[in-house]
Length: 402
Image (cartoon, rainbow, N blue to C red; front, side, top):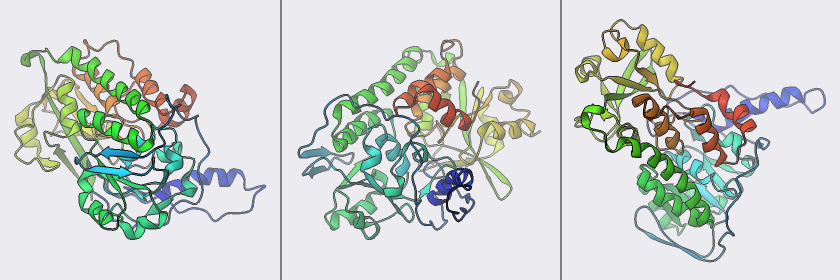
């Protein structure tokens, strides 16, 4: 987990140095501080600092809306089934709560989101946050301390609505008590993405844009499941997905719950998730090598929220204790890719994760997939052209990619 100010100022430093000969000297920024990742991993405990004071230059033209936005009163049924009535399409949107970046990244599919988001937490998951690239209004935003900001921090920005994931309902109740509208989304499964994109489309007054974005995910899902849904169980390889973590020099491995996106991706891509008999379904569960060997997976996928998964795989392969595992002998242990964020989690990039995973589990069925073209197709939804992707996304790619 990282603090927004530190990230933004590091990006700004290059501009400061370049302009030093002709501009007024500026105090250099602090170096970034590394803490633990969120949502799919433990949340941070580092106290946040002040928000950035300037916005980066635009890197690409925003995606164009496909219809005239709605401007009148709206009634939204949110992810919790609550009816939320708003007098108008919100022009001032705040975000708070754990995993807010997943909601924010979905909002950025809508061209006007950067202008309308007026406040969000200053704690993030990645060293290279997406909004530092796409959002040209950071200098106009309020960054709230921590990921649990309540009305005392958020109310001063005068939001028309507050967005958060439904897992943050205790925070949301505090806003309801002071009459600040709250809209909940889940964004945890493909089905919830369809519903929640429609909710965000209402919030943004752009329902047609929401349908267009949802069509991308449905096409990705259909493209994969058309090939995998009729496979016999015997044709589905045994797959193990592990989160790799390093803390205090100790390496640990953990498995996700059955209902989480990581498990769903493996199954949709035509694999048998060998860990589904795990009794703990409340979060990541630590497992030892003895259990991993007992599962005897044919393929292993490594997720590393704290760094490059490909480097984690190299360490695993070099470990004598792992070399007896059949997947290691067969060289079928892979680092799950990522860019700004890893592709395994229910962030907007899960469509990329699904298609990549399918190429590894069933390479013959998906031999026509060009993952670089898939990356271009995905980022086009954000208005990025090929040159922008090559400049801003490609250098951040991690994991087992061509």
